[in-house]
Length: 335
Image (cartoon, helix red, strand yellow):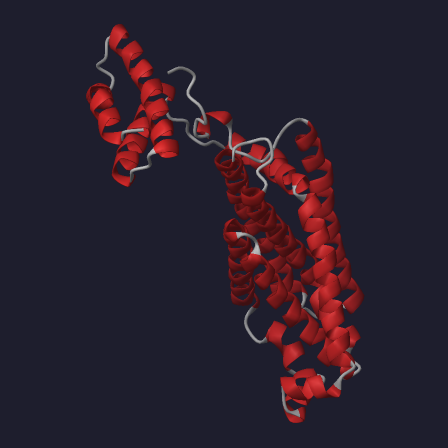
């Protein structure tokens, strides 16, 4: 494509569309029809330019023009409580359910990795010596040591807020960085499993693994599940760049990316619940069995939410993507 010739041939149509958009609601019936036709043509022009002769300045101008025209033609839609309810009862659980073939294996393999790291550290004193001096390790693992006081060293409210912020950031990074071909997601997962494995290894070598699990399991089941879901979704997003399936790479990535944004919002809510458990239940004076029961109940409730509500929504065709009017048009309806 000769871009200069193409621009010369269609500049008048773009200028006319811009003029009609500036007039807003003062259009006659004929002018409104003309605006719709020009919007469709300009969308086609934008698609051709992006695929054949991308020019940053021209693409930016036409993208803005098409967006303004689309908003004028379709109108704006305000979010409502019905949208939020639909997201929580269908969109989010459906997206998690549809990603299960990614995050379930991620969870299994990551947990196995943490167990292997814990066994390796716990059975090799030379590895423990590389982690810290014997006095430092005793300070960490003794009764009333750092592993135990970590959960009660700050007021419950501020600690829960800090935990939620850190975990939400980790989940968001997994979702966002998945677009960079999976490697950053795998690194984040490895760091999380390494930290868990070190705790398992050091506490088991001190004969206090039961104490460690009693502190981690109440909140860790739901927390790690949320991280695994985020990581699995990020890996799926990265793999879409390699294998977009029957869709174009751009369309497939756009669909998965929009669903990932919704997942980030939903997982932030899940991690908020996990943060509350970690801030208020884990350091509480409840018996260990009671704290673990609360953690197991939260985990089972989330899995039921995903597999019952999410499975039903997914079978009904919900992909976790935004509503059709809010999506970018992949192909115009007319030239």
